[in-house]
Image 1 (tube, rainbow, N blue to C red):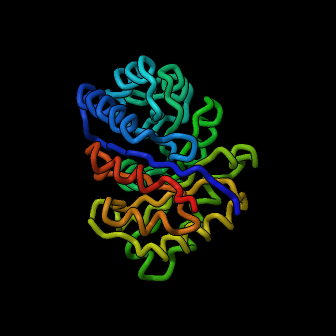
Image 2: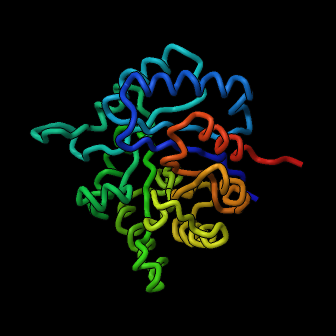
Length: 257
């Protein structure tokens, strides 16, 4: 059986000032030290902070022995230019950012992110040595119409056009059923695993990590992490509190016999 290191990703969305972000990071450092995580078998941890919090949080990380990484919630696919309000991969790389979210459902819904722009952002992320987490998932209407697999495969194929095998091995994918984000609903663990297994067959690489992103919380994380194809979580609300997030991190530590 292929062993994939678990990953817990905290997506803070439009929450936390730079001071609040650093305070969270400090508390997370203490909690990880206390539990001796992540360790050799523990999960990778990435904090996706707002742009305004990235410089201070990055500086904190550089000045301590933090066992986590820092990510950006989106990026522009242009390298530079007259694109007011946008952030380039070069800017993120200069801050020590290692990961970036691409195609989160809220970016698709509210800011016209398309499969085509996701493709451009993936190529830009790889160009700047950033690890992208590509988000895919269906709406409630699409699920009820039995279109989950069709929608997810379309998103995958269009976003990954021209992405090399080597790049696909570095890529992380997050399956996020849109109807379960911020609603308190959660996709049944077995069904989430089934959909993720479909994604894994489509990408064709056993080592690619695939996360579940849809109201993962302390009370359902254990069941989700038991599933053989779920490698961790892209977590929203439950990642805003250190104690809550630490429960998810602890649940991602593989159980050894």
